[in-house]
Image 1 (cartoon, rainbow, N blue to C red):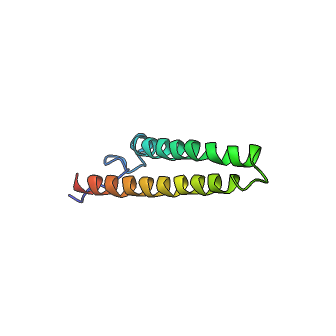
Image 2: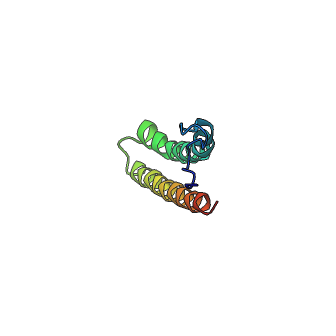
Image 3: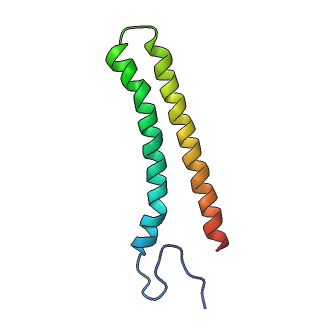
Length: 87
């Protein structure tokens, strides 16, 4: 018996959308969380401090938050892929 393919139903061979959505939901929540957190300093910098030197560190802070978010999401995806390969 060949091994089952991930995200495919074993009986029909069709794409298992429920499993796909179950795996994509936490990733989307993580992306949304870091996007909302980074939006706060971006909004403050662009709305209130557009031509000020104080706005530049806020933009750098927001970019740092986005970089940490990307790293966190990537680590989650790699960790989850390792877990799924061991099942």
